[in-house]
Amino acid sequence: MDWRRLISTDTGIDAKEAFRLYSRRWAIEVAHKEMKGLLNLGKCQCIDFAGQIAGLSLCMIQYNILGCVKRFEAYETVAGLFTEVIGETVELSVARRIRGLIVEAINVIAGFIACDPFELIENVINNNNQIKAVKQAFDRLDLT
Image 1 (cartoon, rainbow, N blue to C red):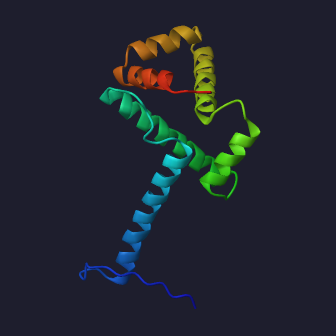
Image 2 (spheres, one colour):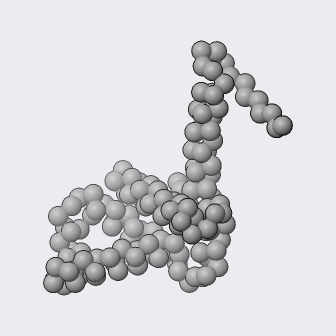
Image 3 (cartoon, rainbow, N blue to C red):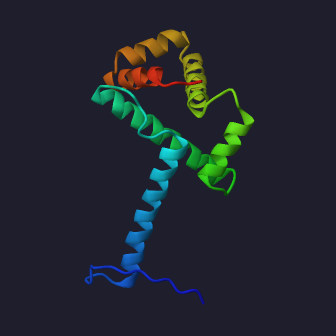
């Protein structure tokens, strides 16, 4: 039998609650480490607050997409999945692939509503300040 020990200064909680809190904390630590190491979290060079938020949002979106792919296709770590994605598409970064998926989705939507995709994108960006900030931050990313 494998024993696990956890030392805590909070004597008001039982062992199960302490392990539940610790496991939640550990998941956050692992996600933070993977985002910093693999997705360049914290390396956005934007000088305004909206750009920083947009950079963080893009990083979180990338991490969530990789997590979903991991969950549905292969039971491996995000690091292993990231290595596989890089190996398959050396010339394209993850950010470019996500951008391509978004453009493809917009083309499908534009086809359904019978309008020009570029006009649809321009109208969406121009009518939403948050999307405009995300686009500006995305344009500042080095996608090579």
